[in-house]
Amino acid sequence: MRKSLQREVRWPRRVVTSADAVRFIDAVGYCLLFPIKNLPLPSLYYAVARRRAVTWDKHCEKIWEWKGLLGRQRRALYTKYFKGRGTFISLTLLPHFLAMRDSAAETTHAEAFYRAGRISADARALWEALASHGPLATLELRHACKMDTKPGNARFKRAMAELQCLLLVFYSGAEQETAAWPSGRFELTAQAFPRQVCDARRITPDQARAALARKYRQWHPDAQPDLLARLFNWSKAEALAACKA
Image 1: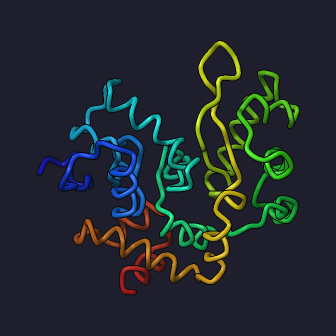
Image 2: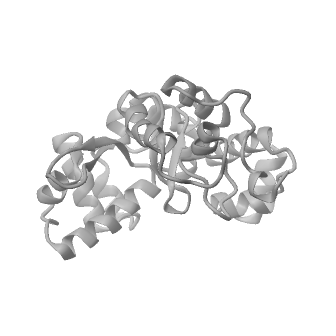
């Protein structure tokens, strides 16, 4: 197998429908939207197009729609996670990701996360706006948090990256706010997936890492602990323990 395909999953059938996409995401547990060089994870794009080289075509259009649809329908979570790249996470493993990141938060916990130094003041503002108003499109959210200037947009992007990395916020589609490109729509994970957040509180970080490692090695049995350590940003000891478990 070519090196570029080593981390892709040879799914038995081409993914054609959104239901197929959910079955694929549930089976692999977590995957990228598009293949990324040096990021050893399967991609939904490859499952749909059966090629790694990405060109804007009917396959891209399809999965671009699914990235919002699946979250809106509560069938999978899509956010920017691994190295800030678009990532799907199955609802089965979402509690384990939340437990691993210690992110099983209530909607009212923004101040606690800020005081603990886990998020910035701007990220706290975004969190509190979403908690108060529910799902919001980008321009609405920036306006609510007084980030509607050009410098404010840069602050918004940094703060949103913080929240997505902690899996506190996810993307649930697009809205046509202006005549330009549609804006992203964001929601709090705690509001959309309360059962998974509740389940995460009963999982220890060690158990979470073991489950994530087990799922990865289900499809890539030769994966070594050092690869998982780099992928998940675990220590060497954490990766070894997860693989042994």
